[in-house]
Length: 77
Image 1 (cartoon, rainbow, N blue to C red):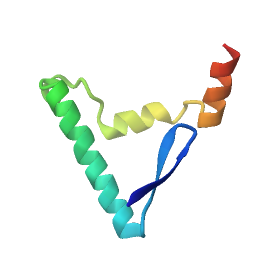
Image 2: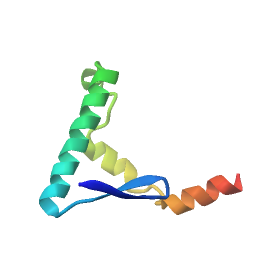
Image 3: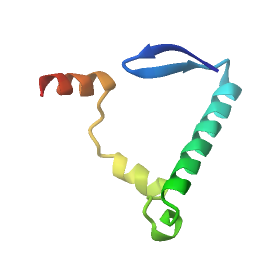
């Protein structure tokens, strides 16, 4: 997996296939988990972070915007 371009401010990573993509997602998940575990050590007990089901339920009714939409709004402010 390697960065091939920067698109709208994001690194675009190309993978060689499904296995490589799943492996990349695994590394990203571990990194995010580790970051928040160190940053918020009491979060597991205090329910500071929603469960995935709660998070998914909250996201269902959100207005979906693309990066281009967000950028356009920022330009107009």
